View (cartoon, one colour):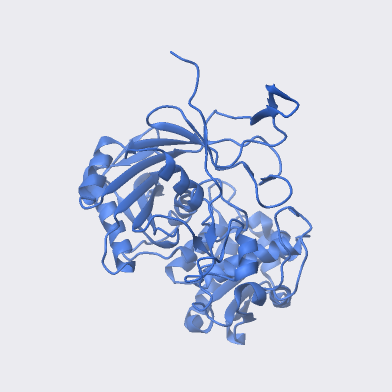
Length: 472
């Protein structure tokens, strides 16, 4: 058996598109592209974007001051090789942010601080008070577009449960999502008092725009009539607390990488192996069929010619059969497992310019977009790595460390790895709730982790599709 591996392949950084008609409005850098061209859906969001608020007693003015900051300019004090200057919300997104009417501004009881300090379960108490505040805004839902919830650092002990996996952030998202309210959690340390104001403004500005229904960018170069589907699972407890139900979540993205909607429902037709759930043939058929309905609804009833399905666990034979049974008219079906915990690492070597016969470790890590094939069905892809074209030196997101690859395992599909790898790289740039150049995983999987956390806290799922913006 040979110890040699295949030669590597490198794929260039995917470009993003910032206008539906001007195809030249493109850039590999999402923030630089927004600053140069504006957002993709410049005329499809409310103007102005109205923000309702929930704040501690007497502290609403801190949120109003924060909103005013959005319209100022700030130079970056961190990630200066990546972050551009923040020129103001209106200059970036061609719309304004303003406070909603006074009836949409809620302040919590003055005694809440003392109540939290005296409570044996402060996380339950704070959650109940915040839920009451959210409920009070339901009557005025048409008066605002996004809800800000301000959480000061002094309440940090109530953000998580002491003996359970309670998470206040996910709990609030789950409650508000059912009611069609996009929430932006505003933490004191991460937003109001964070030193780099440019970083905060880019992060919050993007979130506000996307949660209000805007599309900041799409993918510039993709194959038409393609659907990307991400499948994930969340274990939900029954009334006795036993983990009996598995919520299957299927996310659908079109060929531009833009998220359409996702479906979620409980299922009992599963097999659990090493704590990983696997669907029956009938359940996988059901999942993919309903997912295609979301795509067709947005594309005039047309089915995609190609479907690429991502999940983190392997595709069992019954799951493969269910997928193909649901996709009889598709010209190509790719079933790809993405494994993000691998033992592989890589170092970039280059030729010594003074001695062509000598190679040495490069001064920068493995390039993002590098693929190394391990076998006919397995390959390593560096989604995280050095990127050229952003400055004078290669850019490494995070600034340090040895980038690790993800492992791609093909359970169905054929041909080269080009389409599979380029799709994963491109979809890693489609998280509109992140100001970085890319996510560590394609959005099909990075959203899956968020959805799994929030879904298991939702009191009811219903049968209608959900919009991503309520879970961001």
